Length: 341
Image 1: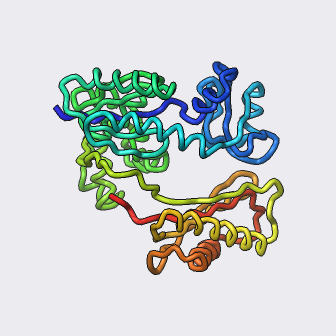
Image 2: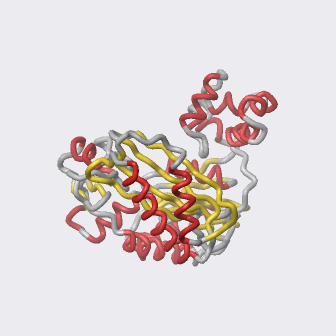
Image 3: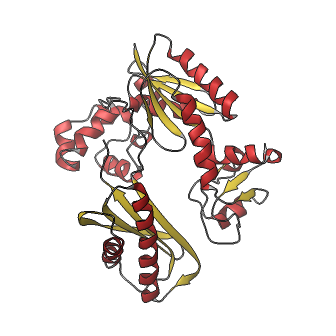
């Protein structure tokens, strides 16, 4: 039988740091910025011990320090995480079947077996023995089911989610429990009287197409039914985008300075795009106003390009879509590549 396994490394970044600093095992660990919680910045990841205090990705470092004053704060070390990820993916590639890498800490593996749990346990054992990292494995009949199953497997466990137990497990949960449906969409569905996965699965497809769009409406219903026709694609992982951002310790109030910073970030991104040897097709600018309101604006490029001047010009054009005048605490620029699938 064909099964899809979703392998997800548990608290990956924090786990890598604990391996580098064994004395931190069992303690709340927070990784973000340059590791100084008195400065502005956000949490990249937090160990399970820190998460119990409400510290999770995206929380301001200062807030994390207030919620968990005993936490150990560490700076982000991208190279260390990339190396650890490469080691795990090398282990997974030794298992038969196509492997689709989704990022540093997760991947899909398609296997032909009557005993998917046995394969999953072997994966966990090999990853643990050879990298000293723990992973959770979701098992499903398609990628959607496997991805959602992983949430019930954590930490370091297994869970099988198929059409047979889909509604038993998810039927009474809100729609945003599904992969690809966020809080805003859930609120729109609630306005239509749809508050559970079961209700969304039984919704009138034509009505949802009229209310939410001819593509998204029917897609939401398929997701609620656990249907996913996508295949595991065994191609090398390609980043969907490259980005740079900077948090300012003092708010920027001069818009000309904001423009200069966006230009600088865009030119840094251009270097990353050149290294990818793939042209960008869209530029997105992120502005986080004080105290903590974030907005994004993007522009499509006239043609795919990696030209530094053109990317910088596009970033400034995106910035023109913001209203100047409010204090700015963070700026970011993202170059997006064409979809590889």
